[in-house]
Image: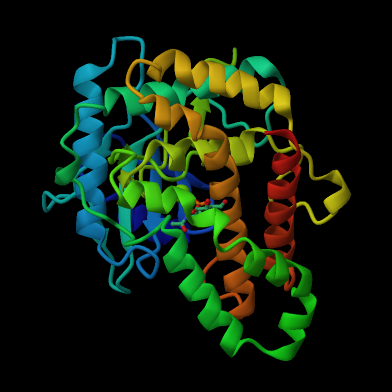
Length: 347
Ligand code: GN1
Ligand code: MG
């Protein structure tokens, strides 16, 4: 692998010589590596292999990432960090290897850390400010200049369609294992489509949204100050509720999304309030009263859609998400759908 990574790194026009590589723990879709360079005079890099089954149009994806990054760079103050993408020797922001895989290269942001789990209310509030600021800075970005990278990504009716098909094709054993979760999903069909209807009727406005605003997509410094928002793969036109909801899903959950012991799944209302406070401190004047009123529903809807998508993948035989063991998707789906119930009790 080292040899391949060296070869791919060298396709990019980035200063510094390859010293060694490390796998970075990251999401369920792409593979990410840290490339260390020789000496101290050049940066280290993050080399990412993009999953082109999930992201079929990599040039469009890179267009979104680079355009938004440039916009943010113009608007950020000097102490705010930004992602920096590198071009290949051919002048493109992505490289396609002999096997057809796509890669992109970014500068590594040193002295930073990722939090897998919220440790205190200050972190929750800081996270809210970070994502609130991100959306604020993109408030004047021409939303039609970015592509819809994964069509209907957060569209509930579409996710239900996929679920319905998966249910028809699923084997008896998987259906039996998932019985209670299938029932919950079937009963929630109406309620969980409210946001979609309001979006489609124009009652909530279209914005540029990040669409994967989990806690681990914020880089923090060692004093827990947010430095930068990362993972711009799913930047798309959307509504503010997608981003608020996905943050609450991860930031206010007592455990990680694949914790199989459902007794441990809990919703931290203090973290919720702190996140919301931070988020609105950056955005209150930009959001309509209707958008603000719908924030609690957003938290439930986005947590639910994750449960629905993961359950669908389980019924389909684990074709979308990377899994670590056979029941991984089932555990993740039941965790997320349980979290929705905990939210229902509190917000
Ligand atoms: C996927 O790969 P990662 O972790 O960045 C997924 C998100 C989910 C997330 C769940 C393109 O993102 O929608 O919220 O897993 N991304 C895609 O952890 O499907
Ligand atoms: Mg992601």
